[in-house]
Image: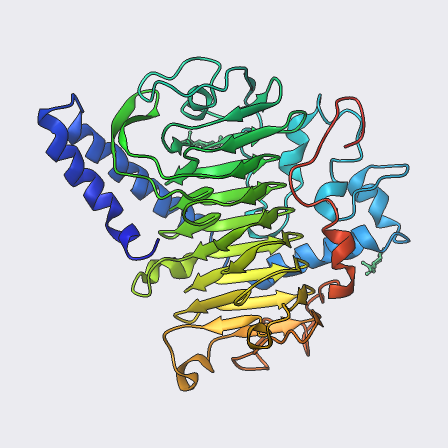
Length: 438
Ligand SMILES: *[C@@H]1O[C@H](CO)[C@@H](O)[C@H](O)[C@H]1NC(C)=O
Ligand SMILES: *[C@@H]1O[C@H](CO)[C@@H](O)[C@H](O)[C@H]1NC(C)=O
């Protein structure tokens, strides 16, 4: 949802004041708490911003080579693994081959690549087990529920006792330093509201099914153990990143949400979205909601090893202002276009596979909005090593000699698009069984 976002913080305060006569809400306090969080979030984003993004690209691409060029002797040292393993990309090879993954869950925190690779989530904290799928009390959530876990202070590694469907009554307001780890159970966040990562730092979300998300009505919701306040209606995103920093979203299966699948706005940065499987959705991902919000130029995002599959239409992603590295993803379906944007985002597309739809008018991977060619021709949008099928084509722009590409520089080239079906083979939520390699 565009445009509306900018005002949501203000309207939140206004709403808090409006309802103060009817509902018992600590209004002044809620302003202060959220303002402080916004301020901390901006500081975290500035600290996480990498002025040398080439370094992150190189690090990621190097690891893909090490994971796929089996003969390289450094591979074993890197992954400490000896024996057959079906994990096909460097993130997965870091943990999936190990039988004791369930006793050593926090190892996952060392496995990310790309701009979100410093996210450690709940590493170093306690393990929390969600036993109760209910979500009835927004102000005093019951121990054992996901909402209770999400508001705890300090690092926490959140797991699930068994398969469950969690229908969230309102948006789930996450706090910093958390991992939500669905491995070992089939966990569906579905038919209700979903994750809100507002002004948080350091969150990992792994191994969930998120689908059929609806907007919440809003109301009084607890956002930490010592704060609750009035919230406006939520948008109905699968995962909403609002001024969030150091976030890693991995192995999520997502489809059919009311708004976006993943939206990242309000200066969110240092984010990796990997190994996800996206299906059945119109506007998949929005990175930056406003052409006038220049603070989104701090955005640095990596999309790697994702499968953009059946029933997708557009925005995979749609970007503004920031820097997006789109590497080794499989785009097998789109109806309108795959990658788009406005307001001069930098888009580096490397080693993806793009299979265009039959429609002769939808073969172009890219789409630029709100700018004539005389303007967008200076935006840096590059395609390197992408595999184009069924007539797909990527319209590049920007200075061809700009240092961000591997041509004519010493940057590591991405693994070519021909490897993508292997690299993304296990995208989406996995079915991990304890005491077995996953
Ligand atoms: C394999 O390892 C050597 C050093 O041991 C390194 O120079 C080379 O680049 C590596 N190959 C790949 C494909 O990463
Ligand atoms: C998150 O963890 C870091 C490192 O332990 C700590 O400095 C920071 O204060 C924590 N943030 C919150 C909001 O608890």
